[in-house]
Amino acid sequence: MPFGFSFEKKQIADFLANAKFPASKKQLLDQAFAKDVPSAVLTMLQALPERTFENAEDVNKGMARHAA
Image (cartoon, rainbow, N blue to C red):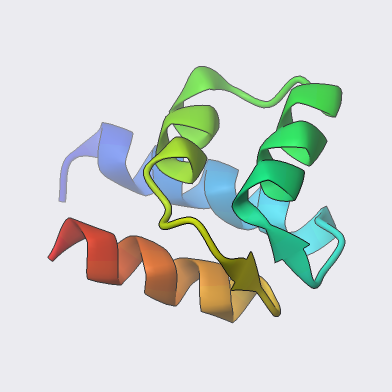
């Protein structure tokens, strides 16, 4: 596994651990901008489908489905 990939996964996990749910894609992006997260996290959030996410696991599933 490349270093960048696991580092990005840790960054998104750190952000999601403190995110407020339920949240739409826009709300997650707003939270991320407010917390000044790394650009890799913003890129991953921007790739999410437009819908409401119930929790961090739901976001991770959305990322996995979009990547597939």
